[in-house]
Picture 1 (cartoon, helix red, strand yellow):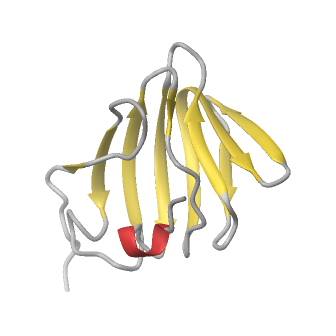
Picture 2: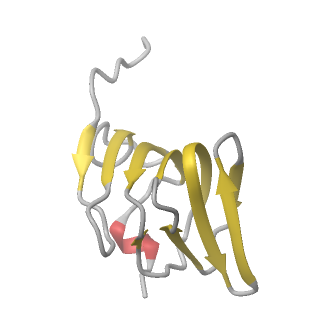
Length: 120
């Protein structure tokens, strides 16, 4: 077996109130990988998506801007150079409240799937 080159990502549709760019490098859409997904996200200021209670862990590294992660007990603002882990079965809602928006990498284990994200 040899390493698999991912030549380019696939742009996938995003949920939320404003257009957000999601480029999936590894996952169910681009590489037919179910074990994990890796996506590059770019969301504008004021973007927010519905809350969710996913059946996967999501590891997020913020590259630019601020990503807000709401949870049942409050909210965490994750800034450039920081990371956050949202655990499987935990309700969360992601948003980018600041004008500059945010750019970040999200890794899901197992891979993100519409039937396991359980959006509100």
